[in-house]
Image (cartoon, rainbow, N blue to C red; front, top):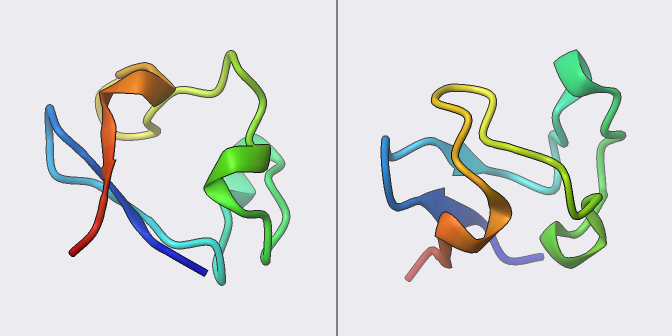
Length: 53
C-alpha cells in the first residue's frame, strides 16, 4: 500500500501502521480514510496529502 505525505508538515501516513490515536486501524488504505480525517500532526485536510514517491 502506498504511503502519503502531508504537503504542509511532512507527516507520512503509513497504511501498515494506520493512525491508532484517531481510531484508524492498521492496513487502512489512505483512500479509505474518512473524508473528515485530518493530519494528526498539523490538522491539514486529506486533500493536502500527496502520494510518497
